[in-house]
Image (tube, one colour):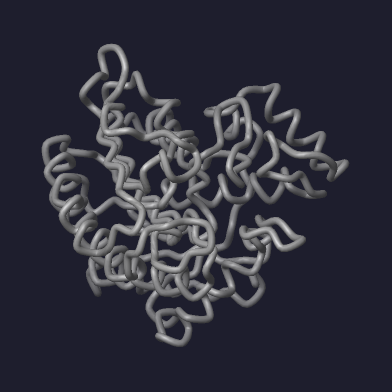
Length: 327
């Protein structure tokens, strides 16, 4: 897909597309399959959104970039299992396959490239549809996530651009535990996560009482939702997220917009419509314009019903486009 990509420099909204990014997926009927990006983009083309965005080529992360978040031993483990294609990278959710290291490194590299381009003013905002791998720990894979591009992006904003008040907002049905616990004691990370109650869904974490640790206690926002929660419940909870972000005054916003929170996802139990995702993205764009010069990067996250993820991510993309000036 890279060979056919055309950069439309009139747009300040970027979308990362390409065969190397689509390769991040697992075969043999696994819900996180390599067809997810095409499902989204086909719908985007149908809506003619392809004519309005700047298509960005995926980028593979160098090992040094991965090591901003992950341990040496774990990166070496993934590289080894990528060569053999054998076994699992965790306790049974995330299978290795030949080339998994490179595929996962492209997810990280693309999210970081989006962050860098937004910080340089080349883009106002961007969407990385195959991104938002929020379960990966610093030292292990988890929940279909090999490398945590969200965590690497946070560390990069600090290491390369000196930002501290980074906001990470997660509306995936699953709690973003790999991000939360990695920054649980970080007083500066603004963390807001609306997810299905952990008593009903993997990874079983993200209780409302989990607000940070040590000096950061009280600085994190987890909002567990009951199974079956719909748009009305989401919009009510979202008001709390907005108030929390306004108080935090972020310098950059990262959105993990997992579509597995929509009704009829095969592995979750929430019942949002795509309107929830479009609304969240639009409101975050407004907050970004108020506090951080419009700087926002969205990452697709989960979503295993292909029609759902196409609708949700297109809703996010439409909001990003509406936030960008035409000139």
